Length: 265
Image (cartoon, rainbow, N blue to C red):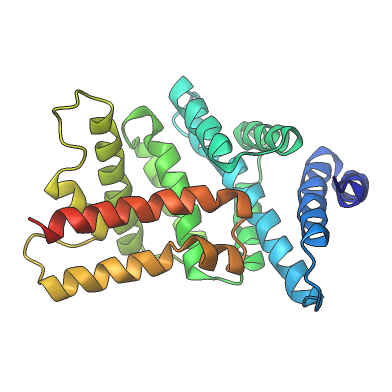
């Protein structure tokens, strides 16, 4: 196992930014070590690799710290909100060090002095405004907000503010919120009796962002667009942390399930 990157990243990160800097340094070092292990014979573009690792670090940092801020938005953190954060960590199959870093970031986000706008701006700058990465980040946050079964007014206001900083329109935010709400309803149904359908037609239309009045051509267009936006390999190539591929894969599964249900309606 490669440890050089983690050790150096943790040391310099702590020196430059204390505990939070050390956690980010460990994450960057972890990505560097993986890159060294998977170095192709014909070499790789070093600058692109560094840029991708910078995006991955910013995405990881923002994901869990903002999740902590959202959990605290309505005044108290519920067990459901803690479970959704743990669920995301489990999906990512994090190493013990990375899992602890995610927990520390979540707790940092709950702090009254947490610099939310600074973290969002760092994330936005790092990912160069790439729409698919920003959309994936927002979907994860909205999903976390629905952890206790509803989107509270305080969470909704905070998400709208985050969208404003990321230059995402309220129209796009509402579309994403409807999609996540439908996915949440579908997941809840799967936990009920086996006689209950896993996804309703209404949920399927909401997930694809279309309506029962949409034409077959429009439905297919929306389906293909969403598949492209959530393609795990494409997202990772743009800077999504590789550990989050499973989350993107689950999104594509929901999209495919919704399309199949509508197609055979």
